[in-house]
Image (cartoon, rainbow, N blue to C red; front, side, top):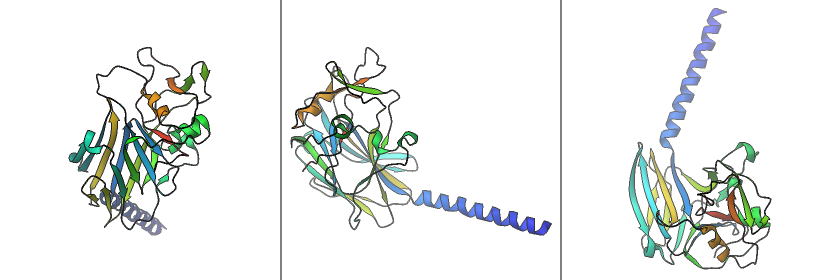
Length: 268
C-alpha cells in the first residue's frame, strides 16, 4: 500500500512539473500586440467586417501613433508619427492569412469582470439607445481588421451624464477601450497607409505596444472637450456631458479626453 502511495505522489509531482514547464514555455512563446487609445477619438463598430477609429480634428489636439517593442522588460520605440504626417491618412491594420474579424470581449457576468468591453462608454447604446450617424470629418481614420477589444483602467468613481438640468440614468464606472492581437509563429501584423508598410512580426519573447493618442498640451486650460463628440453626429440629441458622481470642484470633467465607442454607427 505504501509503494502505491509513493508511486501516486511521484506521478503527481511529475504532472505538476510538466504543467509548470508548459506554462513557462507558453509564456515565453507568447507574442501579442496591444493597442491603447487615449484622447479624442471615436471607435465605431457598425461595420461587422472592420472596426474603425476616427481621430477627431480638434484645435490644439495632436494625433500621434507610437509603436514600442518590448523584450525582457525593456521598451524600445521602433516607429512614431504625429500631427501633419497623419492628416487625412487612412490606415489599415490586418494580419495576412488571418480570416478572423475583430471581436469584442463579453464575459458571462460584466459586474465580475473588469475586462468586459461593456464597461467602455458607448454613446449610442448607453446614452441614446439609437444610431446617431457620424459625419465623415476626421483627422485620421484607422481600420482594424483583426483583434479583440476589451476594457481596462476602469475609473474608481461613477459617472453620470447631464444636459442642462436633465440627468441621464447612466450611473456607473467607465473603462478605457483597448485592443489586443495575439500572434502565432509565422504571423505578422501589417500596418499600411503611411507611405511604407510597417510589419510587426512574431518573435519569441517579444511583444508590441501601440499607443494612438489625440491629446492637448498639458498646460491647456480645463474645458469640456467631450462636447466635440456632438459635433460629429448628424442626429439632433441632447448634449449629455460626463460628470463624476462625487466630483472635486477643481476637476469637474476628469474623462474629458477619453476615447468613446459608437456601437451602432460605422466610419467609411
